[in-house]
Length: 306
Image (tube, rainbow, N blue to C red):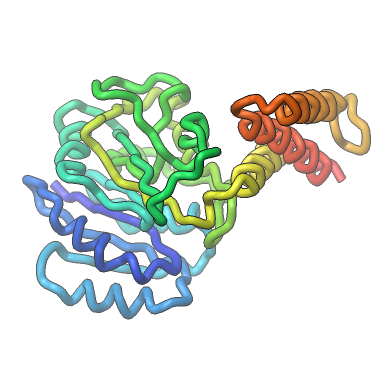
């Protein structure tokens, strides 16, 4: 059995030693290798990876993906691991918790899953969670917790993300077109993305067997720069823009390329946001995010049609 434990990295050299050390402490009944895809880091990432690769223990191999963007980096990892039986993915701002790899391989090898994912627990870099950051917003910082019981995922209501996911590589060998959509790629520390959402949709459409395992756990370090209300608004604007640009159908009725119903949605969300702000209602930021998403969709359809 060939197992690859992969992560993509960009300018996080200061975290690599701790991350690789934690991965090397993972127990697995079968041997595995660590694959790192460096996406044009400008810090001393390569030097650190060379040092870590020379250390004893679990083998570490690193490659450089010259096309910028997380989708390109993840697709490079798929190609590098194409001959493997199983591939596990996490991000470079996370730490694997005890039993992660064992649970991942058990889901794939023994439960027959094509894909398996688990919990992502947010840890705030400065130790402080802002008071305005309600539980309803944690999912937009990648947190996932679907409970303590394992189950089969059948729709998008209980998603798993590529920051904690394992794949049976036969999926990708048998489906050469099944790759991360580069149209939704995020570059560097940019805001947005969505390639993992599209991948989940593709797997559901394929009727792939997707397993949620609560014992697959990673700790996600939320960087301080993400802890601003503006970040959440920009995130949703970008999401709306990409959805409109790549997913919305064409409509005959439009003004300057924009369907009127999108403008109506934007004003409705904006008025509701204003009302909630004036009345000091809770979850007003979440409502403002809806308005920002609608604005992004307007801009996306305008750019697509003009």
